[in-house]
Length: 247
Image (cartoon, rainbow, N blue to C red; front, side):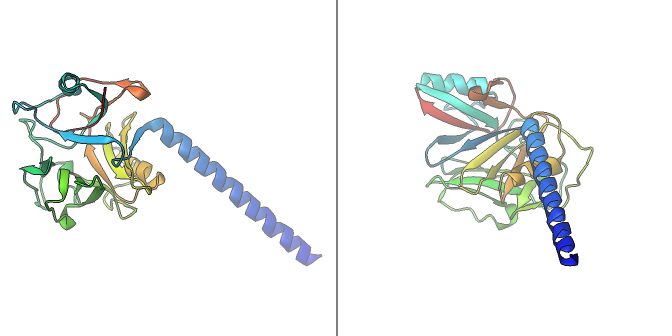
């Protein structure tokens, strides 16, 4: 009789724990889905490009300007997002590589003002074989195999762990956008639908299975994604990351 009672108690406790786990996970997923907009890109199958200046060496600045230029080339802008921090003259802060050419040099400073210098910061790059990589600035080695690269900071996830300087419940909130690499090798671009802190933003990428993710920018963040009713064409950016397709 005692063995049956113990067995029943253990079974009941296990069911309660399992039920609690299910509802917590479900609740977390619903909250995250409502707070962030994510867009997945397979760089092996979709046309992903980094943009800064047009053929006349003039900054694109906005999604609208980029969209108009692409239309003249019979291309459609499918998706666009600001692709990293920039200086007052709209030049990329830190490393920027476009079509294999280094436009601005990497910044390896360990201290400085702003989120860019919240160590570790990192680099998001795409090889000439269209393989995406996100790594810390410290381990980035460069090379002729890189087609596109943008440096920003801080890292959101490093090898599956949330940046050690982020704090759960932090009151430092802004609209934020970033990029991570999914388990299948695809890219996950995301922007918050509401002001959020770094910890929650990093958690979104982690819950989607990303091991490494990089913060791109904050209150200036915008996304152009007509397929999800996001038609923000304004802005004043440095680097723009965009997906295109032929018309």
